[in-house]
Image 1 (cartoon, rainbow, N blue to C red):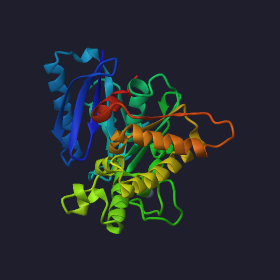
Image 2: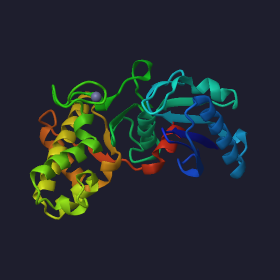
Image 3: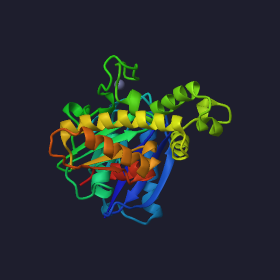
Length: 312
Ligand SMILES: [Zn+2]
């Protein structure tokens, strides 16, 4: 048996056929039409094309899972609003049921990615997990008893929009001092640029071809490992922000495992060792219980596999 995973993004819709072990056996993509009903038709066509191509009949499909950015009423299968597209109150479940007599589940993509990691990825075998995705923004997913916890109407667990610095930087959401404004990959690059402006001798300048806008997370971490003091300062400050955010989440949820996804998580062991050290120093309670803090595993396929994991 197979499940269909649909990953809706602002630019492309990715569709994959996922087997019972969580492997994508075939996948393809289509450009996201700005009209949601055209986009749904395109998705239906792509699903049918993949079934035909892989020679699988509809009776071998357990259901269709959809992950999309934005606010999702997951119990009803409705995308209410997303920053990325002019889509409002799109009832994916109702629309797809017109084409397929199958269960259809819809969730916010960060929540779906967290569930995917618990079902098939790095947190396999765990019941309770929290995932932070450090990308352009900071996404969050909370899994309790192997199920997504998404709060009333599915709008909860916006972990990136919890305050880290009272009265701090203005966030994209309108509040000040959100975790997202300090711990996203975007924030890391801002912090690196501020440091570069102060320290013109930083090695980071050697990698940006004269344009400070070219600095990225990889440059910061590489320069730190080459012994550049400025880069080390940037990483240490960033690690403090991320760690404080993690400690907040640990104090609220106390999950069995904590997952970090997004581009920054590829910085590897040096980044995770620093975070784990900082979290252990500041964890609540005198009896230190070490919680695994690990990088996400599903990578580029997290969208499709996470969506597929919504079924069953
Ligand atoms: Zn915010």
